[in-house]
Image 1 (tube, rainbow, N blue to C red):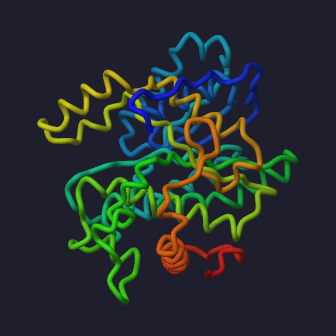
Image 2: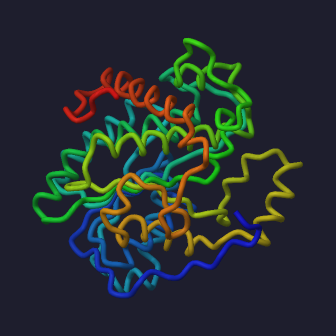
Image 3: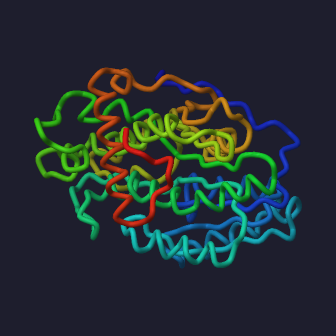
Length: 332
């Protein structure tokens, strides 16, 4: 990607999401909060802010409802805050149970919650934290909500949407770079859970690689008739994500951000383009800025394809421990 990011055009006029219900994960700040704002500005009737910190979510809710653009465009908007901690499968399932008890329709699911920590930690599930938050819990959330997404498509006569915040950083994965290859007999999830595989500055890219491999295998199993699933990369955006870096790295990164980072508003345009503008051609595709793009070379390599199949099968086994998986989710 060039140092100076190319310009991105605003969304087309006339987008109306009136009557639609959307869930945005990681919506208390940053890109997630902006996605929620832009959905509301386009008349989404109900927007669920799925957040780990409910107090911060309530603050975000009040801020959204106070925006003049939202008050003018959508004075009757319903904005709800719901607890969702993607470090924990139990929290994902509690969230979906509560949502399904209260809502019979879901038009848009925006999987935006994500982290990029530099310290190796395991969650209660036994998986490495970045992998759990950025990959595994998002798969579970999507599978739990897929029936209501499909039912909504039947009612409306058009596909519901799942849009995943991805990253070009999948190409910087330690696996893609050959820094820590899979050992003979090693599983993909086991590899990334192990201490030996943890490369701090590659782990965010590792987790995003898993997301993209899953998405590309998904196209072999799930059609776009009822649900269109895609992933987008907004480029470098002026958010607080670099705050997790040590000070000696945070300062130069923040300087670079000041020069080249896109605004939060622009990131929102890119997200909504993937969620509501592009059509079935985007199903299980990677969207860079606002165009369908090729993934990093590793994804299409022989090793990448092997890992993709392994990851899919391991994910099927993982999800089978938690839910009754849909019939189409057969092993590769």
